[in-house]
Image (cartoon, rainbow over all chains, first blue to last red; front, top):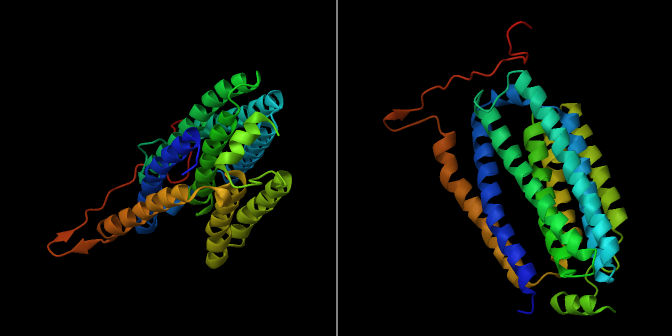
Length: 179
Length: 126
């Protein structure tokens, strides 16, 4: 098979993640198609905030893949700096999301308001939790990469981060654009 | 070539991602993001579906191929991902009829009332 164990393990995790997020998004989709009135609720989500967060995640994916490229060349300190930049992207994403959620909850849209909002907070919340986990792991990987140690981990955490980015790529139109 | 890069190349196909222009790929993704936001503003259903969901598929493909290097990944990974995606389709096909049908033989779905405010500003005193 000739594939490093660590990388294979990351892909294995992502296969299970596809089923987790796929199940959630598929059930959202079938309910959304059933309840036409969910569009009225979706109209209250802020497309521009969603678009900005998409921009942030796409940019953080760029820094993650550039970190991988630096690790390939054996430049651990540069890879670490780029990973820290990726972590900053993740932090920006979470800060923006917290302001967004605060505003929506103040407006009266809570997780118990309706089916749409239940899915909205569950899907976006689960995704945000994955962003947070990725950031924590990335800080750990960056600290070892800075010493030029375990550079293969840079690619592994990058693969995970890009997957989280892809999940958001699908969440964005489902929750923010389809109104 | 560093010891790490040598070890890495044993796991990937030769030249996996070493000569890709990542900044250019990121720029393409940004253009697609702009289209996916502005397209639905036209208010035409077909355009919305193509620009929002069609472009989401294209963006996901670009990220998977160029950032995750799926194009040079081992077949075992492709098979594992394909099985997961197939499971999703089976899940949807199995559940959707129950969710999306409103009535059947000897049964009818009860209506569930939404408690969400219709126009925001759900608190008192506003």
